[in-house]
Image (cartoon, rainbow, N blue to C red; front, side, top):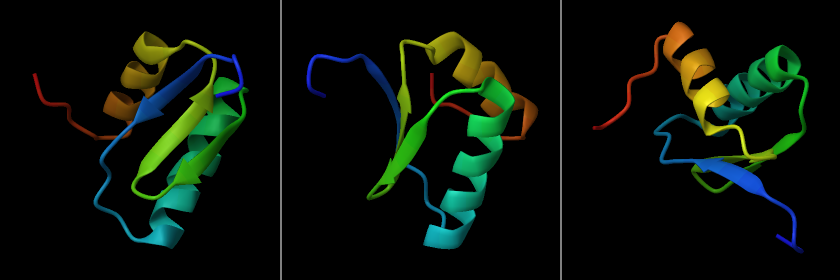
Length: 64
């Protein structure tokens, strides 16, 4: 990503509007930038642990 670190979370099986709403919520909570690419979310920076705790608090589960 042009030499910058991004954190990618995928796959999400949500429609486009639900994915945009989730992105907006997470960007606001974390205070970072991000975008939707196909069925994944990309966030600026190396923040996997913080992102995981926020998604779990919103009710999303992860594979082991």
